[in-house]
Amino acid sequence: MEKKITYELLQVKILRIADYQIGRLNPVRARKIANEWNENKFMPIMVSYRDGVYWIVDGQHRTSGKKMKFGADTLIMCKVIEGLTFEEESFLFATQHVGEKNIPGILKFNGFVLSKNETALKIKNIVEDSGYKISKDNHKSDYTIAAIEAIQYIYDKSNPTILKEVLRLINDTWYGVSDALDGVFIKGVYSFANTYYSIGYDHKRFVKAHTNISPGKIKDDAGNNHTFKDGFTKYGIQMWNHYNNGLRQENKLPFKFIGG
Image (cartoon, rainbow, N blue to C red; front, side, top):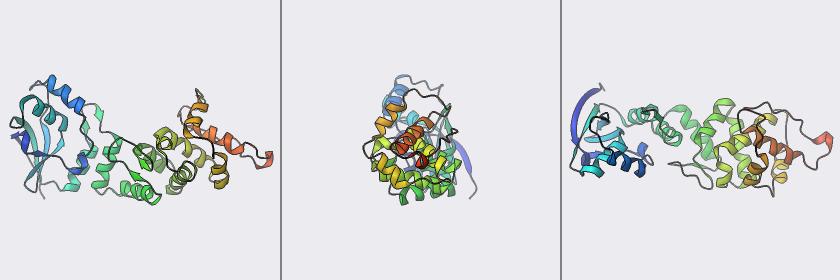
């Protein structure tokens, strides 16, 4: 369908939020905008007119701020795009930039999923097939991944097999606890798995070696080790140490870390 763009003053109360915006609103940021409102400072918000409804694509905080300041009947200048499908809307949301601040990675990823982006759907399937779910916002919990940028990093840098092994290690070793789902820790597990998967390591040995080793202890023991620039290989090195602890020399894994 051909796209049509117009500029219109619309009442705040008729504007709606689609699923790809879930978790986007930061009330503190909206309040700050309300307190500092300057009509000449803010660009028109971006709106998609679809199925008889005006959907906010970019400008939820500006809209919320103006509503706080002037009420739901106030008018706000909108750049209205007509002719977008829901998937096109989701993709536009996921690829846009608000000022100099990128959209948080988890919201961008969920936008790509809703837009039916092939890579995002593949990653989503791997995560869910591994027993996890993807957060709708930036809050992590057990078996819920918010650090999707770490997952994307692993997928892009290696292959689906390594990503599955990383998620399996976290599941079997730490039962998917939230402390093991920090982005840097996930990438630390990747550092170990990616380094030794091809030469072979014993998955069961890894799990056993970390029976009483929490993610927090690994982070603490890594301390200020800045051997590698990437910052997460130090976690992988701690896992390597625990893996080798108590093994005969001929059974120990050699040191092969080269950084991420």
